[in-house]
Length: 176
Image (cartoon, rainbow, N blue to C red):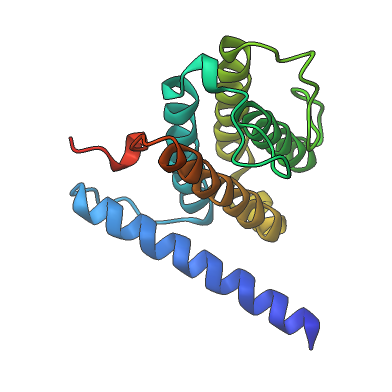
């Protein structure tokens, strides 16, 4: 029973990703077929780009901001996202890249510039890994890929609150 629920959830997530990717492709007048690799890649890149924009945009003097003492600071959230990305990349690729872990050391990534570079590299290494693996390998770990993309999305939402608490409009919500 539990296995069927998990399998159904994975298929539903893939359908969601494929549908959202297909809609974006149609909007851009692109006719390439949606594959498991392209669906995961497009969603990984979309969330990654939004998080990188936040990391670059957020003032360095507010990198230690946290809404309350029970949650991570902005800097700690960014380190956490990148470290978690490397957990996924290393699991999928079977190699050791980056500094993985839920909470990489603030001593290793102290400054805004170091954190931004670390996040960018984790996103880029994820994109490269997704493209190198192909559909069979993506499908073999689809539950993990979907979970880690969702993880980035959850923290994106968390950081939107940090912006709003400081009276700042997040980059993706600004009028273009």
